[in-house]
Length: 188
Image (tube, rainbow, N blue to C red):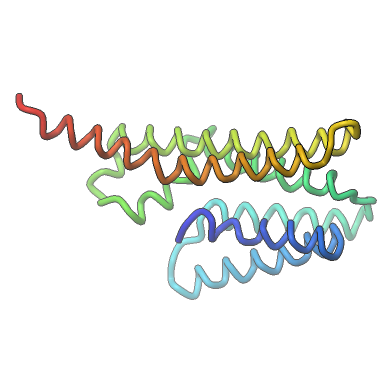
């Protein structure tokens, strides 16, 4: 499964938040997260950090919303969700289990999983995703606390950061593989 597929609950959140309300976005994302985790379990696979992290994040935000009944502005609820995504990425790096490892292991032979180049590649890719999420957080904070900045800046920055992370995730492993294979095939 791809990282983009595991981000579906976040896409559901953003769509429903804009089309209906911030609370509808949170509830829809929680339902999407539950369905995604149920699908993973039904397939007999282990849930990924991003799946479980999304389920926990949306579960906590829905519970908080029901208990504390905050007045969510679009920017404030986006800030909470994007901050949660950033936290998932940073915690995975802090515990030296970059969340991209689980996706990479689906595509790379098991013999390479413990190699330094494989682990370093996943740390770098996860750091790039964390950078994209940090851009989202900064854009959301600007939308909430700096009203002079046009909302179009928030939208463009968020889309550009996401697309850059997707592109890097596809490009960088191929680059590392070419370099790794080139070094392995070089004459001694």
